[in-house]
Image (cartoon, rainbow, N blue to C red; front, side, top):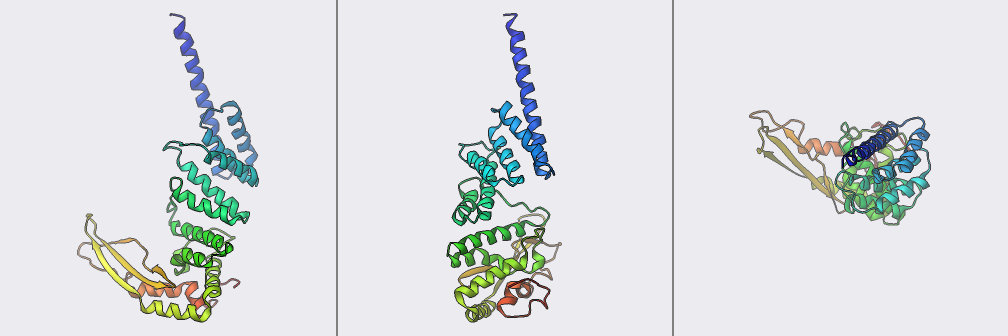
Length: 302
């Protein structure tokens, strides 16, 4: 018995050392990928070593790391293979469940770039339904921009699947916002590019005259309601400003609560008139109403 304890201690120590070494490799590799290391081969070498020497250590994380390494190297086929392998696993547990939604989101990007519209659309939907939803974080106030861009990519898929009505419906509720509402860091995609795509799709399906008539009607149907939320020590003004356009409900308000000072019951910049003015500053509105978009500061090819 006195010889058994040292043996157990030795193997326990070896297991801890292996676990620590694997964890260090994983952390180093992830740091390189998330920081866009200029030499993705270095991160890939770590990931392959992790897969070979520590196959039992967080295999789902290793597959995710390998997929991202290959994606950063421009090898979308190998990245796709590892993302699909990750998705084929059973339950990953709560701590790793977001990997499946993230992998599905990455596959949507891959298939979108390959113009595999149905596959891209499936993964866009599955990341929100089949897997645990991957929430778009605010990220410095740009959460709305991510949702706008995601809606555009979904709309492009519907358009190329010859479902233009669905393309209009998925992007329409987000299109009537001024450029200042969104923030951009993507040189390949811009606010006016997305707006032009959507408006041109509307013109294809309904015609310019009908679209303009429906938008004029929508402006006459705008409703506005204010409520004050008193559940918290700081009271909040909530505004509901909406209308209908081509069968869609357009929420013109920003869907947020506005903090009130003690005794305050209104906010000068929150009103029906302000929200309607924001709609009229949108590129989509100006294009449908045939206003000069260049004079308003919007440039781009139709």
